[in-house]
Image 1: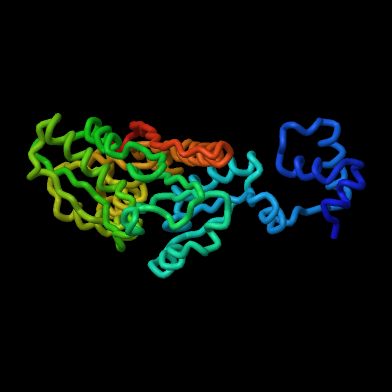
Image 2: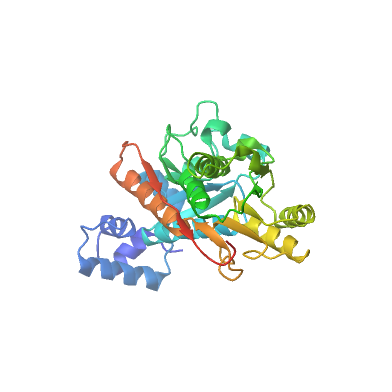
Length: 331
């Protein structure tokens, strides 16, 4: 296999110049950069990441930690993060936390996740995960989709998102108003976003729209289409007049709508419903919802972390993005 010396010899430059090209050093002359890249291609040279780490202290890799896999929100978030990392010469290691056993493993400072140049942590609260409220590593990291005053973070103003839903939801005279969602099977893996949405919604209804709390019914539902479907069927069976629903996620709203349809009740006609996220299916089912800037959330997190790594910055990052209400026919 070819090594750095082979590349340097073929390109007729120094080993130091090859190293600078591999590390995207802007001081390399374009002519030399071109010669090195042609030599790399001709020799099919692949940099040894471990050797590079030993010599420079950098891996050009970022660890991404998420509580789960497979849902659209995190797929879009991680894709947006990875796109920015790739453009800046970084690769990523993805680690779904999934269980307390895996959490126990990342509690060790020697875990492989801490051998990269930094970490992006999605939808998790370090306050709930670790006693000292931080990861056991000196490497820079940033939380995304989590508000945390003690750690660098970028988040969506979910309280404001709840307020937007309450401002816009259609409310029928003397009717019930349901809030669906918020159930967490393990509080350790909760980021608190559902509570923020719920609190914003209730505060706006009560304080600004003058709705009695007695009319507001909170039903804890997991982030599950199937469970939401059953909730939709059951609520419809016990309703004799029109009502309103705020689902804390579009997935919950979708399941509810289909469950209600099975009992011949339809959104925008027999009841009003607003979701949260604006996932890919929301437009096709005409779901009014609160849109999260998912891609911007991921892109900004990656950009801020790269900047922090590059500049060796200790400046505190607390960045808030605003959601937007999207009106469709379900409300």
